[in-house]
Image (cartoon, rainbow over all chains, first blue to last red; front, top):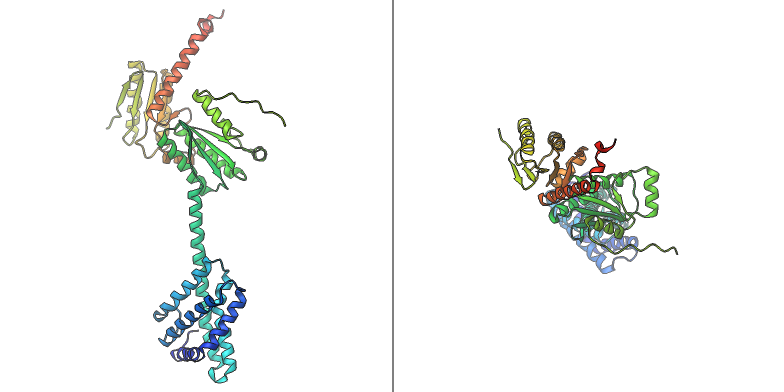
Length: 286
Length: 137
């Protein structure tokens, strides 16, 4: 239900003539919702800005939120919801910031019967609904872009390939291994093997919380790919529970060397390359 | 038709594949290589595929058959220089190039062959004439 030019003019008049009453009521409703997480002054500033832009837009004769004249209003709404999303407010709290305008309008109309009719109010609230939905959409968009950014950062952070010894590189895997991450790990490991000319790679899964068939599949693929390129992989850091899970699931690592700790794996590789490492101390029972 | 050059370095034949392999090129390479192994008496073959962007089942089968031919002629085959992207594709396709040894680069490949020759010679030396199957009555 779009506003007619006549109605939008009347709404602008109403908002202008009772500016204090409207902003005060508006601020009250929003403040009650936020329970003091935003300072009163800050809140008032937001409401006043929104009020000013809304009046501007309406007096320009805009009858719809998607209209050309409402560009500034949309920009302010986007800015508001983006700020709220980044500060960690919920979607409801953000939308209430706009919907509170209805409350304010209603209280003004109740006080003064001449200010507008019920029909006016319904039409006005349709516009407010539009604004609220628009705010909600911007909020969701901001949140989604935040999540995408974080996922990308996580992907970059979590896959270092370190050189342990001449000709030995290691990948300490930390966190859950999904398909996307497994792909990144595989590519980075293989590229490092080529760049450094290392014939041995150790995949350390100490930091992987759980190994299911899918994770095992990813690790196996990486090992086979490394083998195709002429490098040998050793899997290390298998915790007791993980070993039990692997056996229970019937995962076969075939002839791939598996070691309990990174130190064992490195010793194994050094023995293969003929480097003399210190003799292994027999484990003492506690 | 393009021919793939075969270079002799010491006891090793080096084949660097830099052209797209067609049926004819592959057959010609197998024939040339068998002849060269017999003519030179080399004990190692290194196939360098650094320049190959794509290794499909056809190239995979060619590599396998070259390895088999060489083995019959007592030469060991090592495939070197496979790119990461190629390796990932092969794994995704489920091709594992059975019976082919691989190394990261030509240098590592030569080391691998040298090490194996050394072990073989050592075994022969240690086993001595007693280990000959014909020695048993």
